[in-house]
Length: 166
Image 1 (cartoon, rainbow, N blue to C red):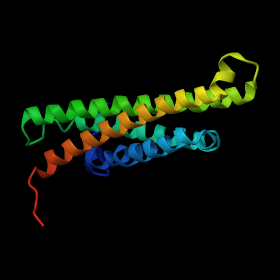
Image 2 (spheres, one colour):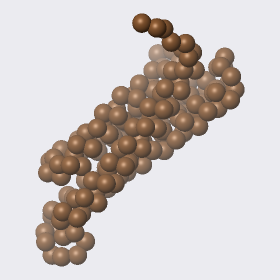
Image 3 (cartoon, one colour):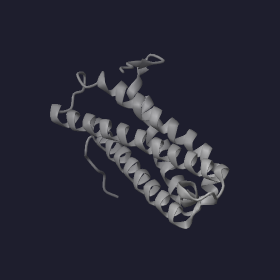
């Protein structure tokens, strides 16, 4: 999916800010919710919306970056590395969205099904909460790391690697 321009400007520099801001924010919230399952039950659908927005932003950012690969003045290998990092960030942001959605849906349904034993009781148990917490923390950490690395490499491509001393 290629998206070249927004409002007459290159789309990629505008769209990258969606996942760069939203995915780490959603990841931090998910990590907090992992340790507070009651908060996940209460505010989980908002987190689903936030991670969905972050994943959509990552998809749009990666798609809009494809058109810039040929016009970039940076080295071909650096641009290719950044593109691969962007693809990884897109994938992990989407997987993070799926994990959050699954966690919220499973906790919602387990609450509705009651304590009839089996899988639904396990999900409501302390062991189930720990399993969900581990998966949430891992997926949140992976998505946040991938988006940060891709964003950092893109900033280095655009602004160079020079640093000013202070």
